[in-house]
Image 1 (cartoon, rainbow, N blue to C red):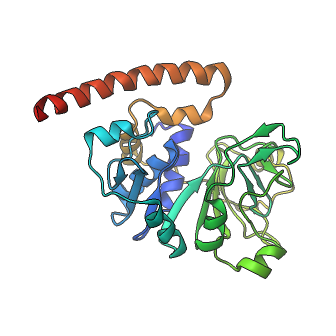
Image 2: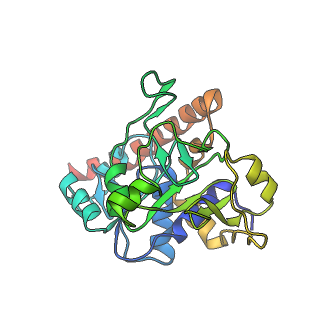
Amino acid sequence: MDYSIDELIITCMARELTGEVLVSSVTALGALAAHLAKRTHAPDLAVLSTPESGMEVTPMPTLTLGQFLTDVQRGVPLTMEDIFDAIFLDRFRIWINPAQIDRYGNVNITAIGPWEAPRVALVGSRGIPEDTSHLSAIFYYLTNHSPRTVVERVDFRSGAGFGPERERYLGSYGAPTRLVTNLGVFDWSGPDHTMRAVSLHPGITPNMVKNSTGFPIDIPEDVPVTEPPSRNDVAIIRAADPLEVRKLEFLAGREAAERLVEIFERERQAMRAAVWPNRARER
């Protein structure tokens, strides 16, 4: 079965989602993972698409912050209080795409460089402090596993991994559970809760992972190969994201800008075709 790396990552992410929990789909890959899990093995998931469109609508990746979904679908409305209640009750799951992650699972989405004079300012810690102190499963993914993203020490700790502070103040809830990258699947079952390879993707060797990681990483000699997505998995992903918004997460610079313009125009045409007939019928 032919598949792309984005479809392999999404399938690995979907395999981690189970049970009756509220799944936030704030990125294209997160949305598609939630959709795939619900369609295949986890029908009881409640998928939050966007605050505008609410819960339990098809989480089609868009560039317009859910406006397309809001116009053509009616989901179950949720408030931010509802979402934080789900977090505090451990009924919430989210796939987070950090700028940096270290050997103990600390993550950074706040700033690159020293806090006093960062080279790059990012989005800020947002809800990660709550997630990494209340949830029994914390999921991360990276589209580019490199020494710049998988680092010895994060520049700013937006979310807590393992370490003395967790043992003293937080306990096991909120500890990192899984990391899926373009090279493999990882957890923190290595010595002293350090990162360890669970599986490597087809064609990826241990040396490739070691050379792409900013610290010595534990890779078992018998590490298995990641199970590829099935034909059905790929079909579900492609049907849910016909504009291939998911591929933007793998691009940068001019290539990303050109693809963004192309997708936006295609989405605009699709929005007009979907919304105008509905509004005509309402009149």
